[in-house]
Image 1 (cartoon, rainbow, N blue to C red):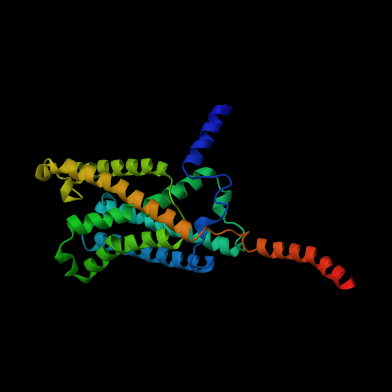
Image 2: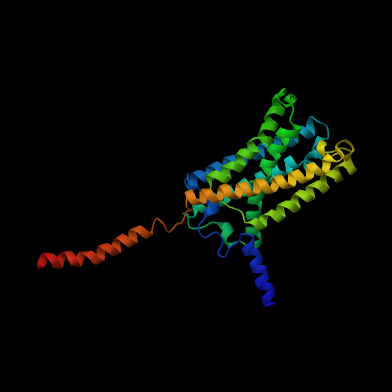
Length: 282
């Protein structure tokens, strides 16, 4: 029993869930903004992304007559839901951090499974949106998407701004870098989506993305799938490297940094004052 517990604990550590969890508050701080400003920006991104996904879903349900049934079949929509979930979760945790006087936030005391899910969610929202953006603009986009105001806005929001949201977390917060172990869950999610794409064809009669159609792509289908898998590894590695560089340039926030210098100065003054008085008396 004890060995099983130690193995389970080790698995949490290997996936970036330390004990205590996030002692330097890197998930709720930024090298450029105060926690209050970071909380506000995250909340604004959460609101915008939620409004976007509700608008897209409503448009497909009302104007496309049944298009809402296809909503969860697209990787774009699924990854965007991940963005919505992350920014709402991170904004709430950052707001709580501010309200508590920057002395902690709720996730730190929650069960470790929720801490694991949060860091895994972070790893997906800094990688999947970039893959979506690259695949869409290199393989799927056509000039017609800009002919209608709605399609232009929705495609820019879901296929361009999504990567902007990811870069916000990569460059402007202390979060990350993700451990290499997070590569595996990402692969599993991509493989599961491949299954969703073919289940969609079997049940609804269409391919979510044209390059997944084996009748037209033939041998290129395997190349596309392998290419996306390799691209995922490349993007993950680049994001991890950028986060590591950011951590070196901007050390992570610590609530003890502001307290330690004054204490050291007071101790120095306490030791030095008797020497001055003795010299004056002599």
